[in-house]
Image 1 (cartoon, rainbow, N blue to C red):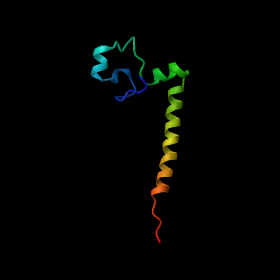
Image 2: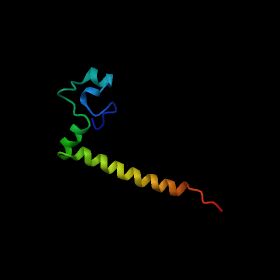
Image 3: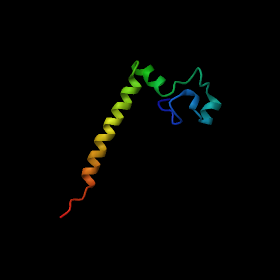
Image 4: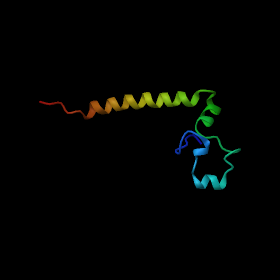
Length: 71
């Protein structure tokens, strides 16, 4: 699973449906395990950096779009 909404650690995972139907210890990769498996060591942290950088850029653009200039 690409994202663990309950925290960084596997032990934090609490989605009851997945826990009932999947063997989380042997069948599922969560968060960093998932992304590092796909892209190699450090991929997860690289993605977090890209998301943070994009978020900052988008926030600045939105601030510019919605700023009201005083007359």
